[in-house]
Length: 107
View 1 (cartoon, rainbow, N blue to C red):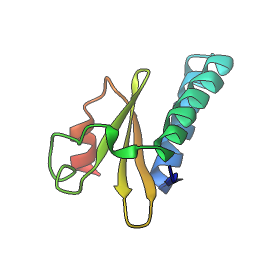
View 2 (cartoon, rainbow, N blue to C red):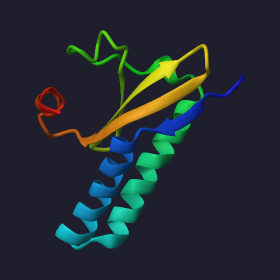
View 3 (tube, rainbow, N blue to C red):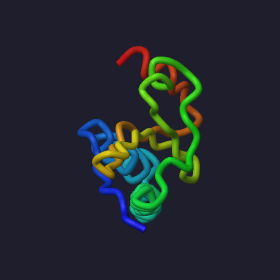
């Protein structure tokens, strides 16, 4: 089975850094921050195989753009699959308890 190349959009990289910073500095748990960001990155790496197995987002405009969501612990990674190029692009990573649809609408 041929694998997909997985890449991060700049905002997804920033999201991952912000997740680390929040846990490490605000919650004062640097070890937990490192473990959590490692689990998120590991989950995203797994998208290299069968990336279309996760559900499409339910709301527009992301549903029309074929954006999918990957749950990882209490976080959600949002990504798209390009079957022709065999690539996956991760656009955003959010804490699942946030009003993500409102954040996206206001971006």
